[in-house]
Amino acid sequence: MTHFETDTQYLIDTTKKLVECDSPVGYYERIHELLRELVAEAGYELQIDNKATAYVLVEGKDTSKTVGVNAHLDTIGLIVRGFNSDGTLRVRQLGGINYHSIEGETCHVVCRDGSVVDGQVICNHHSVHVFEDARTMERTEDNMSISLIADVSSAEEARALGVSEGAVIAIDPHFEM
Picture 1 (tube, one colour):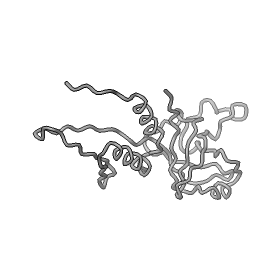
Picture 2 (cartoon, rainbow, N blue to C red):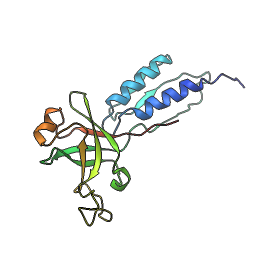
Picture 3 (cartoon, rainbow, N blue to C red):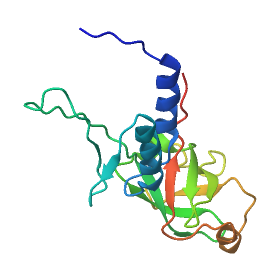
Picture 4 (cartoon, rainbow, N blue to C red):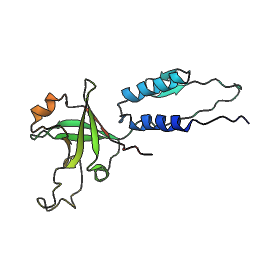
């Protein structure tokens, strides 16, 4: 059996890059770019099919057998479906999201020009001293929004940052080691 040294720091750094790469369902641009770089560093070429599936062919010593390894690279996310008058964003989910589990999370709104605007997932009835149902209300796309970290107070101000309908929103994974 062949033994090799494991570069633990490289594995940690690479895992961090992959986990922190914004890649919500249907938005593969950044993860494919990162994979292309990582695969090229290892001396291989990344191939992507028309379903956005990435492949790397590694020739082995014995061509009578084929081994496949796969990984799931996209994440759940949101998409901007509109603006509220106060500049918060109305959203729709990409993938199966339990809104209760992402309330209060930091997120990244990926604008069409590639810039990123940070925000926070909020329930429209978040204040328990103002809204009687704040603790018990079911969280759905009808009562969840993104509050941008930037100081905006209108839809026009949010749009001025580059945010538009159809912008993809990635949930911050909070990678820690």
